[in-house]
Length: 238
Image (tube, rainbow, N blue to C red; front, side, top):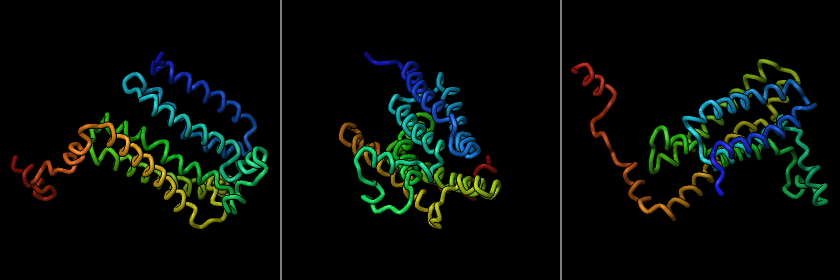
């Protein structure tokens, strides 16, 4: 029996609330935890305040839940100190970092990748249902927005690090001495979104009968007249 959207959202929220409360107890750096959770609170407020008029699909809610769950782990330990390698050694007896040839804690890199992989689809749903994009643009614009928001987040990290400075600023920034950290984070988020949109496009190609027609229509020129100064002149004439 299919669970309705409201009940499904409440179930996901209940699981997330349990995780959030558990990891809110004695985080490694309380001030960094507070900074990391500002966007979480904003996001949850948006989700619940828009639910009645704009409920997302269960797929989108699940993807958002998975991303927030990973972020909550990162905010508890700080991203640079999540002991994933210790957990992996407990389970397998081997060091994941040694197996992969990593010399740093890569939990933050993984979450940046998951940001694109998990959130590109919910972003796509918003674009389709509000902006009414179709075809090529229904795949490109979610990728584009994921890339741009990833860049904006890196600017926010930089600003916070400059504002607070010291250990708090460095904990929030989490570069671990890598001068290319921001570039790699943005690249991984972009790669995740590209994979998500490529998979979505491949699935739609297989099951959507008018896929090619919709794609071609989305690239057709709808307004042949130039804009810019020509459009300004036309508006002044009206």
